Image 1 (tube, helix red, strand yellow):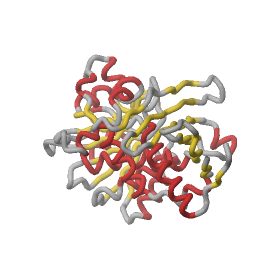
Image 2: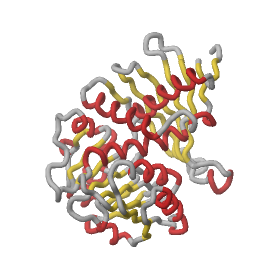
Image 3: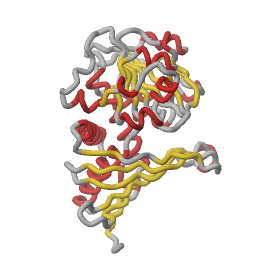
Length: 321
């Protein structure tokens, strides 16, 4: 079994490689070549942590495994660790034997950012110029870096529950040579693309904060009860998702469905747009929304790519398990 420690990931996985892996996984899911297993995601009742498992099998890529981990909200303040902690385990689909254990913290950030940037590539207006960020934590910086590569944005605007964290976004924008402006939530109506990446259980982005033609990537809702955007906004948009079953149960769509504003039949797999079996955006004034719940197959795809690179470069650790 190969072990790829967390410390090696930064030197192995690039944003471009993560983007390609995630885009291919979405396409495979939509064509029926890959499937995700039901998600386990629960509150531990200890350290306010959320913990769970995401797994799946990609028959095309012969990738089988799971990611175990979750969110420990006290880590950064108390221990100097990032709040998201995870590990990916891969198995040989022919024998069931474990084949790899891979540090999943940076991979999770990269694949989550890749998912939203894939949605921007396929759903945002080509002339999008202003990108809005809701959330300014650790994950948000990865989201912004990846998104800025998808369109010729000329401005970044941002809002966060804790405004003192907004310099995290300003620094990324500065590195990209794009001006940054802090705004109130109603000011998000200037954005052509909005990424929401928080761990909130009540909505911040409302329907009247969004202008016609906007693409929204909701990337923080991955647990029952979490919510980043108003259900009325979900109902107003054409909703795409990574995994319909997850969107209904743990994603942003859970609330609009519970209120009877949309049905499961209204949800469209993003992979169908990638595969050209769905047209995606059909007008410049259409609001599109990507409900990114985070699927195990994303983690497996980027982890498998990392294992191959680590073995080739001699930084993977081999153990007799």
